[in-house]
Amino acid sequence: MQPAEMPILAVLGPQTPLPRSTPSELAPAVVERARRGDADAMRALVLHHQKPVHALLYRLLVPSGRGALVEDCTQETFLRVYRALPDFQPQGAAKLSTWILTIATRLALNELRRPSLVVAVDELAALPVSSPLHADSLVERRALGQAIRDALGQLPPDQRAVLVLRELHGLEYAEIAGILDLELGTLKSRLARARAAMRTALEHHHG
Image 1 (tube, rainbow, N blue to C red):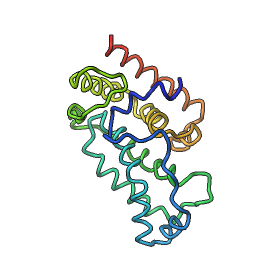
Image 2 (cartoon, rainbow, N blue to C red):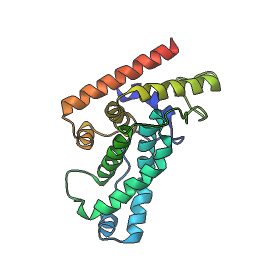
Image 3 (tube, helix red, strand yellow):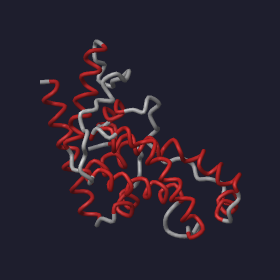
Image 4 (spheres, rainbow, N blue to C red):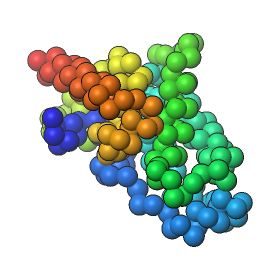
């Protein structure tokens, strides 16, 4: 499947969808100052990366009715980044943006594995959805968003993470494999199953 076949996931919000690419990397000098504890540099780092982190957490947590955790997990992600940043190696294999998304993804997956006391919160129903399928009415667009939310909510968390990181955040297979600690073959298998499940759900919705 080509990436263009999955733009439907953009209806999951946040309302300003991310481009299918990772953010530009922060200037090395700023990263180095942040690693040394410079408050202004750390603030710049957070501002540079907070939108993709928030979007990732939103897309992983909301389909399971855990949207109330998005803000807390965003803050926790950057708290962990702050604590671990002195040990981050700028010349290592992982880019800073990928390293930060790794922290956010693993935090979200830990939350998704916890038993949920409240899963009936529908936070997408009221969102204005811009559908790439050109639904004819607001009701249809909301129904489409609901169908996608439901389909994502039925995916195992690890499959959902693979799908979101690949289709919405544009990460390479090797980067996703590192984030989720997966063999490449396992990753591709999970992605294929997730895409198939989404296709089936959307075909059922339109059928």
